[in-house]
Length: 194
Image (cartoon, rainbow, N blue to C red; front, side):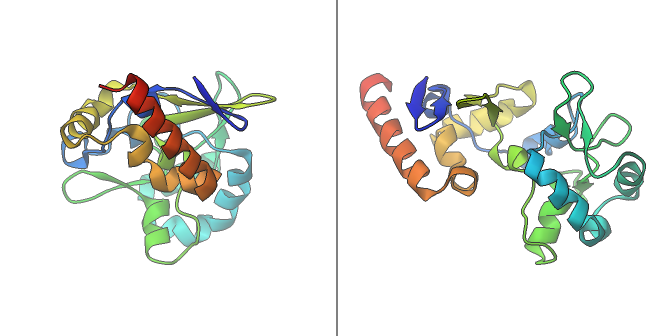
């Protein structure tokens, strides 16, 4: 682990390579799993306030799920905040294109200018998962079999996780943090990289 300010960063973020390959996985991360996407506490109010604006972008099943469960819920295992799901399957905010590839309805609304919030930061940051402790945050690389095609494409294109996630890392922690992270990654690569 490497520490930058109050963040402990797994070295896997420098060593592992990753580029989403939607043509292969079809966005399985939005469909697979036993709970919805993790949410930060400050995102709950955002979801409540934008629901009417994103509703036209959602599937009828997603709308029904949100109207029955709420714009967010809690994970029954740990009590953390998560997005609701449709029949314990896909995220209630997911949509599907004509090829069956998932797209976030929230992100579609953002791209159309209907809202000014892109999507939950946990989705934007994936495959980095952030765990918050009382005095620090741990940034870890999450390995999930549905992302094997993303790992293969990342390796082929030689894109480390931290470079693939430049935009969401800056969104979450700022330009200055990302600059330091990049410098640390380059030093790490000189010392440990192949």
